[in-house]
Length: 182
Image 1 (cartoon, rainbow, N blue to C red):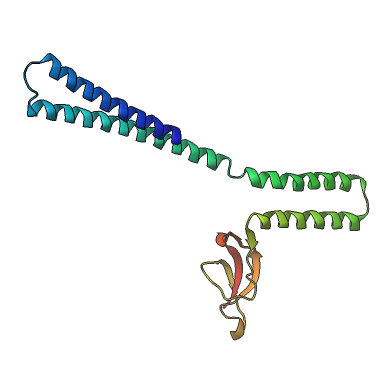
Image 2 (cartoon, rainbow, N blue to C red):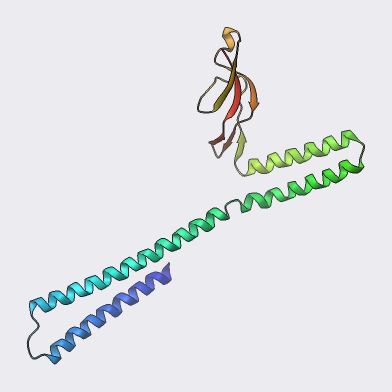
């Protein structure tokens, strides 16, 4: 960015020197004084040159920022993937262990540990599960799959949660699929 600004300044100063030199040459070569029209034509040519240079500089800036944006989008998930790789390794070890081990309790404990590690990794990236059961139905958070006859005290309340909803940094990224009392 600084480099670009320096280049623009150099171009501007070179242009001014060139225009001044051309004006001086015209004055020296012609015995006639420079007319107002010639001065205005020189100013218009200088303004046009500056405009063209500024426009091309803006186009370069636009292309460069578009490329940076694409790179950012392509690499946005890199951090999450790096944190999920150890969880994947744990799942692979658990899978190998299940093939040889017959101790169901140990396998269950191992899978529970991996699940908690997975939850902690996702929570560190801003993922938070939504609490829906026994809450008032809210169309901004819930997707009603079906309604179930319930007492007056359960009317408009989430009776059961079919699929959990999730927030990512306080933004709903998946609505909870629920059963609502009617």
